[in-house]
Length: 214
Ligand code: DGL
Image: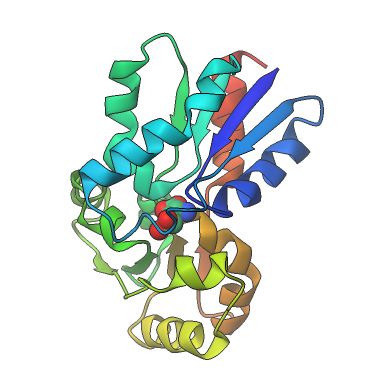
């Protein structure tokens, strides 16, 4: 089985590692677009064009499924790619708003994601479908993907955001960018046990299983 994984940068490797553990036999091919990361502050047209270009090696390798391991590219481009390449299976990744809405007890959740994801119709649709009765805090994480990509993690900057959302009552924090998977443990520690932290690697593994009948 061949699984293709795409992200603008190192977020794809975080997800690919998780998939490799779930499917030890699978051949996992990861591509990124390091020259153009971050995508999160680009226009929808730019994100779509760059994603389309970057996945070409995965399309030619005949992957059984291509995982768009980028919330930003999924939000903006996945439907366009499905139309353009109808015989290719794609799985996208989205902020876990539905799960967060089920798990919150305080009725306050925080979604950490890129500006392009937060502005997208697809994400706005998720919030109105599953979380319209909740307070959804969308903190400014616009510098995080760059910081993580370049291994310049500023713990104080992250702590400021996490402390603020916890003080405002968030008891579930959604990591809506695969770059942030690399700092999941740090975020969890910074909550001091006041919030749970969600990211969808396991759910993506289940979707791959279902799609490929494994
Ligand atoms: N890792 C990507 C995501 O999941 C975005 C990072 C970026 O390029 O801004 O949204």
